[in-house]
Length: 211
Image 1: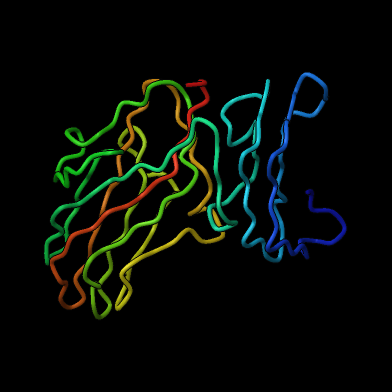
Image 2: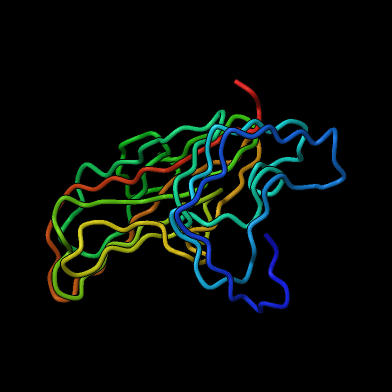
């Protein structure tokens, strides 16, 4: 699926790519599934139960390139949904951090990082709080890699209690290498007030090493 003379006027919806065997040994291509980089809309596209053999890593470039979390559901071999929890989010502006698969909510990132074993990809992230921030207050959750924020962000503002992957760089997959340290970070702003609450994010993580 490549953008060409259509100049991005591509619509793809309510479809699936499933139950295929993608074998790199029988092709000169370098990517199994490649989404366009310019398009009008891609929604409700399910990718699942496919077998990828011999493609380059990470999976976000060798197996499925140009994927965005807002495209639809994704089910991968060696992939799973993991939680990153915040047991208590305070009523003032603050920075907190939790590990991938943990529930720390620490004020310092060094105690809330997950050491990644092998290479892989974080494909998407969605977050929820029990109580809406209210007013113009905001809680923004960000995937962090080696103490640096990545483009994968998720913001909850006003009367909303959840954020979901949207089209754009904020929902593009993030690859990680062996030994990388991952965490999620939460930054809150009170405008003018912010309700104390509980929060959590779920992330779809896959590993390039067969398990």
